[in-house]
Image (cartoon, rainbow, N blue to C red; front, side, top):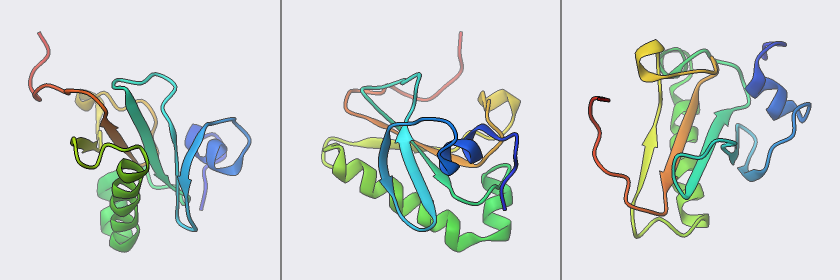
Length: 118
């Protein structure tokens, strides 16, 4: 299932260019065009789900595939030992801008702590 107007569905289909990092039959990982760390890769499911909650409720095995792909991305990028962060943003307050479940893999430098802005 895909959504014709979804940016990430278009990227997965190859209609919008991206820089691939990893892929398999269920997920596609590519470099973020606005990186927030030296390594910033997005891992998306090939099927469209609006957010991580919808994905977890509908297909927990696919959610696990995203996380396992994130671990593989960290290994490939050479950040598995130094540390990395995996993040799902859900909802307006989290800053989500694309409504297709996706996992951010960030690392390659000190990331600081989570917390409030300002």
